[in-house]
Amino acid sequence: MLESIYVKNLALIEECGIDFKEGLNILTGETGAGKSVLIGSVNLALGARADKDMIRTGAEDAFVSISFSESAKARTLLDSWDIPCDDGTIVISRKISATKNIFKINGEIANARQVKELAEYLIDIHGQHEHQSLLNNARQLEMLDAYGMEKIAPALEKCAESAGKLKALREELSSLSERQKGSDREIDLLSYEIKEIDDANLIPGEDEELEEKYKIMQAAGKNTELLNEALNCVSGDDSGDAGSLISRAIQSMNRVKSEDERITSALDKLSEAEELLGDFSLEISRYLSDTDFSEEEFKETEERLNLINTLKNRYGATVDEILKTRDEKENELLKLRDIDAYREKIKKECDEAEAVYAASARNLSKLRTEAAKRFSKELETELKELSFGTVAFNIEVIPDESKVSNLGFDSCEFMISVNLGEPLKPMKNVSSGGELSRIMLAIKTILAEKDDIDSLIFDEIDAGISGRTAWEVSGKLNRLSRKHQVIAITHLAQIAAMADAHFEIKKTSAEGKTVTNISMLDREGEIGELARLIGADEQSEASLTNAKELKDRADAEKKR
Image (tube, rainbow, N blue to C red; front, side, top):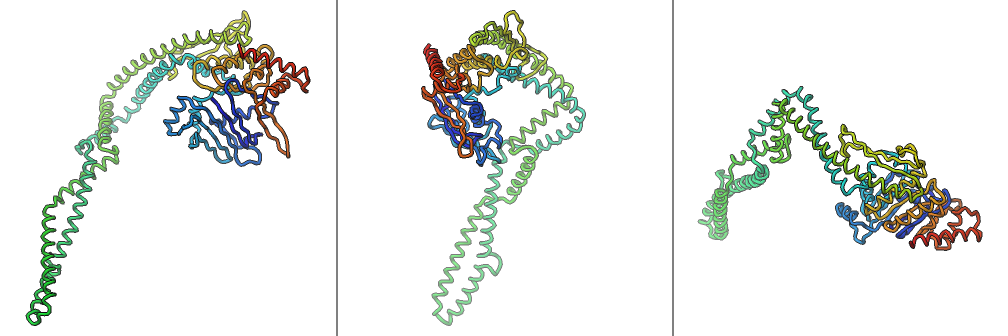
C-alpha cells in the first residue's frame, strides 16, 4: 500500500505531504491547482524522465519521497540487492537538480532501473491519456497475457527458449557460407593454436602448484645464497675470511705471551672466538647440506611457468581455461574441415528447432485464444456495468506462423461494437476518448483481481463521462477499492462522493508567489467540495443539500 508522499520544490509545490488511507483515496481541486503534478511526483520517484524545469523557481533542487508497506515479492527483490527493509516499510526517494538525479531505496543509493523494477511489485499507475495505449496491438497482447498469466506465463517461457535456440541456429547457418571463404587460413591458424597448447602437455591445476613450488624454491635459493656468503666470510678459502684472520691473530698473540703473561686472558678470549666460529661454520655447513635446493630444478620450474604464462596471455587465465579453449578450437577446426557436413548437421538441428518452436508457439496461441474468450466475456460484463448497454466485445488472436519471436507468432486485436446491430470493428476505429477511459478501467478492474499489487492510481479516469455513467465508474472504483488501495484524481462529484479519504488540492498566492497546498477534508469539507464540483459558484443551502444527498447516496452504495 502507498502510505505517503512527500514533495518539496516541485513545480508549484513548495512543500507538502499526504498520508494515504486504505480504500478509495480521492484528490480534487480547481484546474491548474497541481493535481497531476502530485501524481507526476510519484512517477518521478519511480524513475520517470525528469527535467530541470520541474524544479520550483528559486530552488536549487526538488525532492520527492514515497513510502510503501512492503510486499513479499518486493522484500525478496530488496534482499537480492542487499537493501535492508527492517521495519516493513519501503521508502523510495529522488533528488532532482540541474546537473544530476539521486535515487535512494531505504536510504541506500540505487539506480533508475532498480527503482522501476521494484515499482512493478508495488503500484500500478494509469496516467492521463494512458488509455490511448489500448489502441496499440502490442499493448493489447500484453494485457491478454497478463489476464491468462497462470497458464500463459509457462508457455511464454518455453516459447522464448525455443525461439532463442532457433534464432541462434539460423544465425549459425547463415554465417557458415561467409566463414567458408576464409576457411583455409582459419584452419591453419586453429591447427597451430591447438598444437601449441598440446605441445605444452598441460595438466589441470598445475599452474597453481608450480607457482607455489616456485615461491618456495625462490626463497630457498635466496637463503642458500646468503648463507654461503656468510660461511665464506667466516671460513672461506680466502685468507681474508674471519677464521683465517683470527688464526693469524692467535699466532701473533702466542709470541707475545711467551714474553708477557699479562695477555693470557685476552688470548683465551680470542681462542674462544675461534672455537665459536668453527662451531658456526660446522652448523651452517650441515644446514646447507640438508637443504634440498636444486639450481637445475629451479630453472626448469621457472621455464615451465614462463611457458604457461605465455599460453595464459593467449588462451585463458588458468590452465583449465586454456584446455577449454583448446577443445573449443578443436570443435571449430572439425567444423571447418568438413564444413558441408557441419552445415547439414546445423540445418537438421534448425529444422528440429523450427518444429519445437512451432509446437510451443501453437500451444501458446491456443492458450491465448482460450483466455481471449474468457477475457472478452468478462470485459463485456464490466463494460455493461459502465453504461455500455449494447456493447459487444471480442479479442481476436491472429497467428502468423512465419514469425519467430520470443512472444510467439500471435498478434492481437481488440474488437468492439458499441451500438446494436453494428459489426465488431477494431477498437482504434470506433472508440472515443471517454469510451477508451472506461474500457481501461474495466480492464484494470479485471486484471487487478489476478495480481497482488496493492495500490492503483487513476489520473482523471473520468475523462469524457458524466451523469449516470459517472455513477457507474464511481461504483466500479468503490468495488475495486475493497481489494486494493485506489488513488484517483477526478473532477466529477459522483466519483468524489465515493471517497473513503478525500484530499483537496488548492492553489494560493501570497507574498508574490504561488503555492499548492493539500489537505484531507472532514465530512463538512467534503460536502463543500462536492458542492463546488456540482457546479455551484457559491455555496448556498440548496447546493450543500445536493452535495449532502450525493454523499449519503455514496455512503449507502458502499454499505451494499
